[in-house]
Image: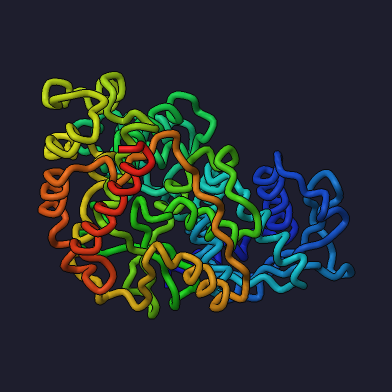
Length: 452
């Protein structure tokens, strides 16, 4: 009933003024966009529940009301609900892919329209929708009236809203780092060039806030990256080629390489915002790795290459741990012996924690399991199911690399205890016995190389 009243209110606006208001809104939304490929073309917008439709032409400078003598190159059909509650860019793209919002055009213009919509500034979108809601008599809810954990980019309508979200993030960074990350990421999405917000978000990410946020979201529901809607998803496990895979999946979906400067974020943060429940998919993929080799890779990368356990890093990111850590920049012996302390650093915990913690000790929920040594089979698998060739980018090799040859028998005993449940879970692929054989071989090769 209410929707009919709002539609009636919309119909009471003279048709000429409807076109004028729509053209004005589009010109505001696309003021800074390059629309040269739409020069002298017309577009039609239809509301599915009604006979309401509008035709506009882009005349190289701006959108103008048009008549129906010119055929539109694209017709966009959507519901009234999607207009007054315009979705975020991610949801918008999903609605288009699902057919909830339909773009009737040839493939070239479909792709161009989708790319153009994906470039919209969410802040401008919200401002326009708030104005439309006011016109048809709908009340706009103030951002301060909504629970912080429920805030999304759609709630941001002006600069004051961004300031409020930023300040709330800072207020919660010690008591609730997960919420602080969510809010600062939201503020960054609305103000991507804000230097203070950008610095804070990067600090949160380096401090492991983003990983805590991701872990909190999977406590009751494991989430993954969608590859094929409702069919195939991939669970990203840290230090198992996940950076390369995430970059390749972005290229697979968008036909271009991921540009961190464009998004003002790392590829991990890009996908963290797009994770979906694993159980939504019929085929569930995971890449696995020997637990101790994964641990050594994490140490080499996060401790040696990135310096996550230097005094300055701890002072900046986890000052509450300054008097708790036994050594800064620990060597591999210190790192293993005092790992119970070092894992208090969120970024270390994220990269080193056992597999069982990530997947609730249940590997049977995955339909397709690929050991890291068979990563080429994973590439072929994805290429076959998507009909698009997937090629993983060459993994970045750090300057420092710790191998099995750097471990003592005592180190192995400590790590076997730490990853005992992982080895039980991964028994068909990895075992302690095979790891010991590799360790002995690595030590033999090392002794031969050094002439001992």
